[in-house]
Image (cartoon, rainbow, N blue to C red; front, side, top):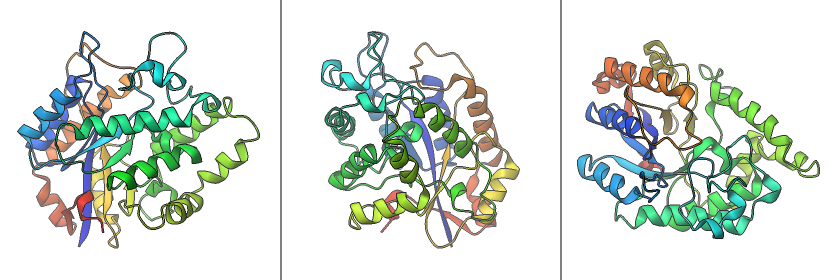
Length: 312
């Protein structure tokens, strides 16, 4: 039997995204939510406890994890303690993923912020299902990736597989906007990486080397889904759903990432949330509604829901 984890990213700071994810949970079309814990209210106060508790009360069966962010919104730590992670303009906001200054980042500050975001989640008492990272930046540089893996091992939680299925050459999963946009972002980042570090960066992001680093550095302690399905992003359609389910590998769990939103206005939209894709999020939700209840579609292709907790 094929197994799938369907994860909605970015719950937290944006109310229309939250409502879209909640609708998908009501329709039982997703089973996992990845939450940004640095959402703030109009008074610039962090309100993660409030929206996390609301989500858990309403959907106690949902698997909820932390979508670690160092590219959107503000840190949950005091700005003065993580100054190397934020813009120089005094806004206190994280640098965008395409403007990160790798050489400027303090690894100690980065590790501290990653831990602070996880601890903020755990303070709610909600079970921590997994961790993933916004824009994938924590998987791009070897030093960042080690911090990410260390946090997962320390807290005993799985991570999102950092190697998209589109990079593995598997039939039915070769075309991906995530892969293409990741290449563009990497090119932009090159301007901020000293040439002496560039060869190491290029070697690191090769799928074989990422896998080797996970196997060797983590000494078998790191858990992650066998496949990360990145071929649905910006290609949403019922036909695409069927293609994914038809070609889904059978040997391990697969995670499919979705981005959802209802139509409406938002008062608070932090930097690092792609407003250009808001219509795309609404389309993803519309298609999900057309497919609900999704269990019937999964059965047709011999697929069943799974979770990060099922990963051995």
